[in-house]
Image (cartoon, rainbow, N blue to C red):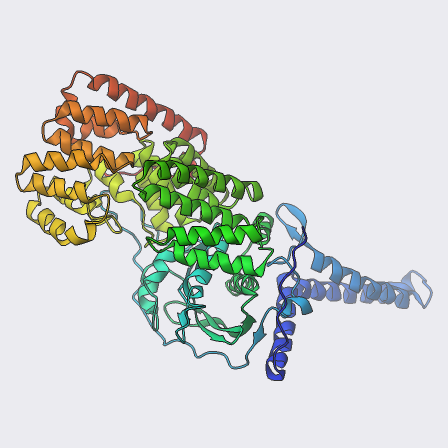
Length: 619
């Protein structure tokens, strides 16, 4: 099925003139990227040299007088052929390859019609400075070597765009358009794009470039949005941090029906401005996923905006389905729909809804992979579902294979933290966390739970950001800070009241206040609503600590059946002492050890040691 780009109506004369200038500038940029100017200069230099040699040798070789003219004519005829070859092909380490347009089409007249640029560029942000970045990053409970070389891929953060005027019809673009740009740039070896979550911390007003630079970011993309009738005015800036040096700035006006063309153009300009070197496969990946309908893409962006809001997943699901009804060949929409189904399944109290949504989620991801087997966001989201389906080793292998092709995606390493822990590979999980943080110093991972299972309770308490309110107080409990644990629990009571974690928190508070009967009752009640095997394992710890070893062992057998390998915890967790005294403990421990051995073998066979690097957990 052929795909056509939506057309933008002609702008007014001043904008048309600016658009003409933009068309010329983009064409010149494309000539530079394809090294046409460089080849032309080399050709002219060689031609001049050949003409001089022919003039010198003509008398000595008794050649006719028209020889020099003939050589010059041949060289002039070869000039356009050389330019065409320079445009079409490139010499790479892999050999001669056809040069692909960065955004999938040559930026000629048709490409320039994507946007009408308004002449006056926006003012640069204030000049901010920041102290030099530290040469080493210290992780609680984990040792790592410092890296002060300053080398490595460029670090980019895309901030949410700011709405200049409140507009319910377009406000979804403030977050969903930057998120789409972030996802389209994910997985490139020469560029690390910080997670969308990190960018939201700097939303609103003038961003503090010093604070952004302190997080290891090299450049930031920021902008403002304003709807003008049926058009969208976007003021966008790409700035170096922390000094605020403007790498590129532009004011663009596009029709609201051409949002993908806008995203595609911004992606291309970012790569050009940062001089990102792309392999042939990366260029192909950037061109691969393009929607066939402007309306379908708008519905996709609206759904993305809702999908990041707890409680609005069903609304997002309906929009994804509407988008795919119009354009069923857009792989990212299938992947995001799968994520939406997974979230509905994870938090639904209805067991039948839970199972149905998980099945729909898996089917959606399979559709995405049929369209694009290498879709980075698809592998990241699907790995989370596989863990919840009890297939942690499979999830781990999938992420490792993706990282073997692109090891500059912090989100994939963050997913590997989760998968490795569920597979029982705790030290490998901690090392994956270090790799993620080396790429993105602020990316959230679930490493706090990894540190807790390793007995590194200080590290667990410091990595509890984004947790439901349980990890920090249980970690404080384990290091003897009972009063602090009670304070944290009481501060989070209201927030946790409507979550599936409420029984865990109530049970822990009862343990700390000496109410053993209530603590046991709350822990058992949690098993009625918590389906996550790690959550059930935490409940088993409470029950074992309260002296009910047999009941706790029964729950642990269940979490092993669900694919959660807790081999290390069974041997070393101090709260499981009563479980270790049970007659059936040896059998359960051997089953966990067997699962760990199998997962370790799969980790090595997939190339995990090369991807994650040396395991470095403090003794």
